[in-house]
Amino acid sequence: MPKDTKQTAALYRMVMPEHTCPYGLKSKHLLETHGYEVEDHHLKTREETDAFMREHDVKTTPQTFVDGERIGGHDELRIFLGIDPPKEEQSDTSYRPVIAIFSVCALLALGLAWHQYGNVLTWQSFIWFISLSMTVLAIQKLQDVEQFSTMFLNYDLLAKKWVPYGKIYPYGEALAGTLMTAGILPWISAPVALFIGTIGAVSVFKAVYIDKRELKCACVGGSSKVPLGFISLTENLMMMLMGIWLGVRFFAGV
Image: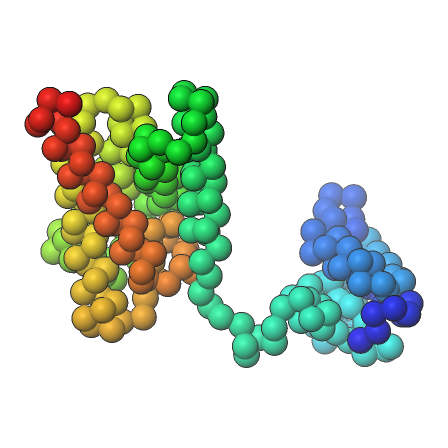
């Protein structure tokens, strides 16, 4: 694939009054940023689109052609341009969701600490990081509680014994995280965090390190591609730590 010389690519994409295909726009952008002159062919009606797909024996648009050879749709174009690996080499797991959540929550915690104390390196920064992470992870689960609870049943020991726990869990996580962030009602947040964190940690450890199962983690919702493992265990251990610490402070009257 040339890098420095202009080459022409023909792109066929839907551009209708009521709908412009987003993958067509993304394909056009990819081609242009990789040095291609784009012959941009608009499919302006449903009939025109269907006729194009029948002619080229394809099921979707957009379609890209380079030197008369059909490259394929947007996903195939990314592979052709070297952005993504071939499909047989692509992984069905990704840590991107948890990296994004933990990174943003860490920045939020540091920002809150700076606003409150004029210093980012405080114990409260760590507390806020955990509580904010719990809250955001709960939001991910609450988007589709049914789907989350189904995936959760694959490994959580209590949910396997009592199915409704899978639907209660994200509400408990959200409650504990919110109370921890606000610094109120530790007699509620501490036992909730300790309870769900302990059961979660034991469940993950058993599934991954004893039973050697390869599962997806429900930590960021039921459609997650995050593998169940060290990150999931760490999340639960952090909740356990917070539950213990808040409980000790509460009973010590600190």
